[in-house]
Length: 222
Image (cartoon, rainbow, N blue to C red; front, side, top):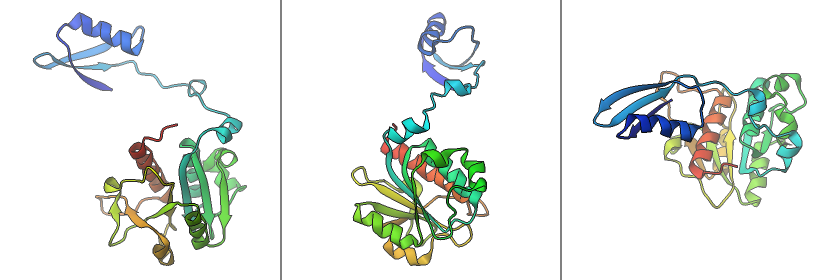
């Protein structure tokens, strides 16, 4: 963790850091760059223990405020991916998961391996057909976007989510992506920019990227 500050007196700088971060017995590495600009680094950072994470219980989670966000899983074949997505949904207190088509549903030991109990906290529904899930959300006023590579897709870094309407994101099958038949039902398509040789991300990784982007742009921290 590196900070860049403008501060004229070195002793006062040390006192300032101590007061703001409330640290005892820490080491500070200081490097002069130019003028009175200083780089300094705290060297004894420690990881938090489980009992320091302020985790809520499943009962508390179900009662707390949720993000106005639904994730639609369109024929996801990997049970481990599904479990990972449940875990991400729990982390960001997402309102609902819609599991569609061949997407596996809890309880299942392979989902549990990566969900780590998130199937108990996150609300979910199953739809045999993804289009039916989308139509259902449309009646509730949702704006629905597919996460896919398409000729008229908006790049994720350029996407500006609505602050007034709830949002749903559709994530497609690991091999064929979002079903072509679904595209006509969507309000738009969003693509995650990629710069390597594959242009292919694991679906659970994609969920994490897109959800964090949504949270950071809407400032809907809970």
